[in-house]
Image (cartoon, rainbow, N blue to C red; front, side, top):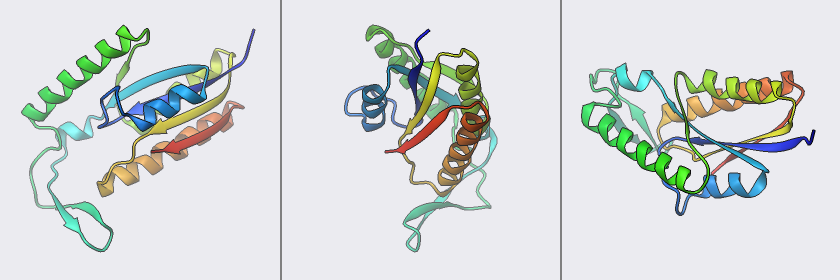
Length: 162
């Protein structure tokens, strides 16, 4: 049985096939590509409103705002974009895995599942960075958990932020 490299493309806001640096790099560097989108339940319930922070050059949440990150119209737009992306991936001979849950749990869980098949020796995680400050915290958590899962499973791992 041949061992392979596997790239996980963590789709976030960059839901397009053309001109997508994270997708292109993931597809070019491994024998197997696993595109995945995690619908984070916190985006549906946690209120957020943002202001620009000149000091950090990022957007900071305002604690008193009562606006969910994904309201009904944006949620509909997201689902339409995911449907379009999945259709495009299928037309290209691939697919899009969609999970509902916390990305810092779901993505490392995929790494563990890939490790149990016994055919993967190296995992790569590719994703596009986000400008929101809470996204940077999420990205750090996902990266840390993916590295820990890969190490615990005896896999090598590399992470690529685009």
